Image (cartoon, rainbow, N blue to C red; front, side, top):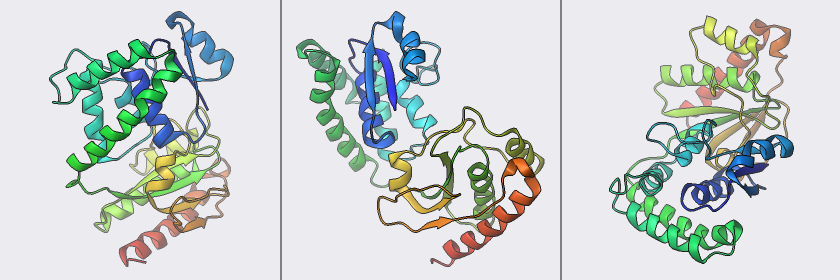
Length: 274
């Protein structure tokens, strides 16, 4: 994927590419351009803009772009939550937010000054973020990582979303502390209206609010992977199931019944420790 932001990066615009490279996109391409050109370049290059005003992956209230990436891509890693606070303090005026934030700001300012360009800056700073992430892991060591099931369909807009919603419902009913996420190998711009309406009729919420791609973190953190006809390779040898389900667009009820039957079996297996 292509990602575009403002040139002359310092904190957030280096932290975000690090996060993308390590947890989201296996083959990212970064573009750094003058601020006034970001949206035009994003449209021309079909790139995702970040860390500029009025975009999804930007600052929102007291939270910075690093936080927006964690939220959008459902990076449920306690160490990243700890690191996000460090980045937020360094990238905003709240330098006292964490003991490390002021130091990160100082180091990032120095790296910006001595780097030839933004790509050189990334190569210099990425090891620092690797180290800060490891430090954050030690701080978050007492917070258990929630196990979760990854549901994947081509467009990430219907089958995977319905499956994840029902898995969360049934897992909660069984008292299982196992989450679920939905993603697509070629995600659509919006969720399928039939899936959203069908879930709402059952009192369930479609999530995410907009389809997103499968990330590195999804594949690495999943306890089990369920695919609806997509090729997906696990990173840790996890079990991958292929579910044959009719299209939601051909009728929500038929697709829902097939999905729920499979989800009930999967929840039972996980509850039994299989």
